[in-house]
Length: 142
Image (tube, rainbow, N blue to C red; front, side):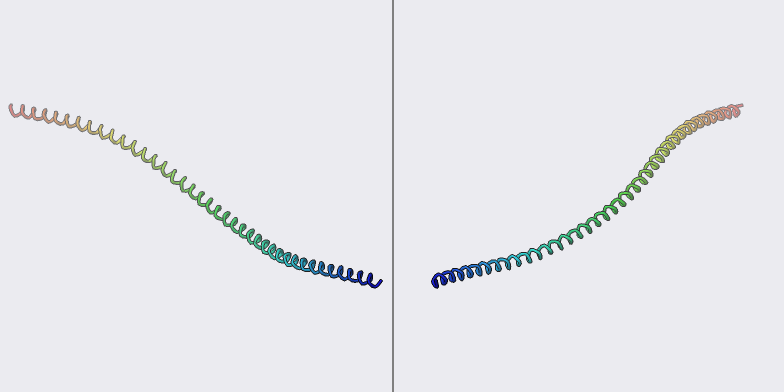
């Protein structure tokens, strides 16, 4: 009976040692997992902070983009106004040029008419001078 009791006692101690060893292994594994969880939580927090910073940076860039687009639209509008003003000035200049060219043609026609009249007047004056000279010649002969 004592041998049987010793055998059971040894088996009980072996089983207790095995359970203690298993418990130690589980504690070590639990500690490793807790360390990994802590590390992952730290990484997650850092990733969340990075994400928040990136969202803020995106918002800043979107604001800058909107601002630049507004400024660009303002410049485009100003350019359209300037272009429109210059187109009006060009049209006015073309109209003035056409009017000036028409005036030049009218003046050239008037000049030609006046030249013709001057030539006619010169011819008439020459004719009258000849007539006067002929009459003077006749008067002297008498």
